[in-house]
Image (tube, rainbow, N blue to C red; front, side):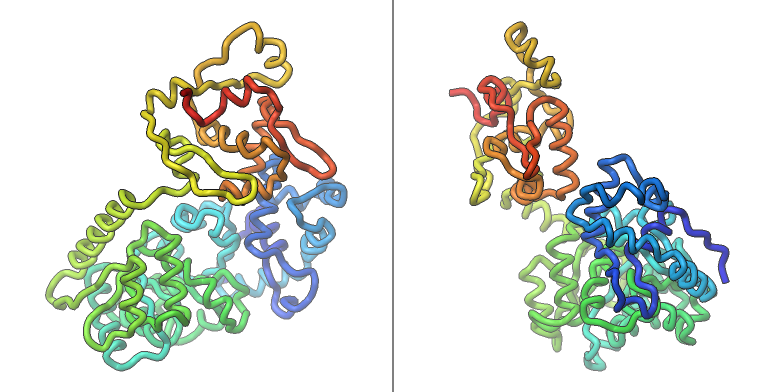
Length: 467
């Protein structure tokens, strides 16, 4: 039994997001991560925290409030599961488990940095929490692999342990389990990101001693008593990569399976974790296809040659590849909001690609204006003084011209967020600020936003240079 005390914020998050044993099939359905993010955005906009929802005064007001497309009666029903929460937490803590919310100081910062709003709201864990911030090598692969691949995995894990490189895996049979157990056998440390049965796995004799020694930490984002599901197995993949400094795919079947899905997701979305792939004789076709998606080849290495040096070289190759890619690829819309080489030519319907404009930074800045006046002050003073020069000081000011361009016709916040490819919560914060600055007006029934129709104002924030 541990002395873990849940913070009030984490208690609220558990009530909203957690399943409690048999209640997994009973209404109300706990919030998904996406739904919780919507709620978290609403709380932030209203200067509230999750623990404020435990206040009866706040709960009394919920039925009259609009909460980012969430039904207030469902939120209230979830918050009223206090008895089930108490029983579940007592059981889990008696089993030695820790429960950490995304707002707790113990929560791994690396998950927030790399996954942002995809970082899990709740983590269940058992073992040494400090291992979660140590990084290491994620070793992943198929469940059903030949003896050659398994032996390769074991030798690699032995080297990791000898050279102080932590092994991170999904704990599944096959490559994942072989890498973790082999590292532990040699006195190394490991993290297992479990898709199911965390409570049961924690007392397995293969792991129990290593957990007690502080050499192993098992974590899960799912109910510690949950059974296996393909969806959960797929969903946890990104956490394996996000906790690591680099990842190595031992074997992957092309275009199917959890290893392939996890690797392709990491290559596409977790930009600062190099994904290495074992190459050579008897490797699967999926390994070769991952190279075409940006993975780095991990060639044969001598066991007498420091693995850290091999990994460092692979990381250097990754950084060089990334630099080359940044030169030839057009950045995303949000990367270009303050870039003078790009302007917004998006239409209301088709969200066309941002087009490159040939103009210098100096000319761009000199032709832009900025106004922080309220709507009332702006009306009184627009004929009395010129607008100050527009020099974006933060991302809001940089994105503002694109927002105003899109709001020449009324749009709701969801549509605008989709066009500019940002979270709806972030878009609402920008719109709230634009309304306060007197640049945008908010309509009701339905709720939409549109730019205040003033020719001087529109030309002020236009992204087009003067002819």
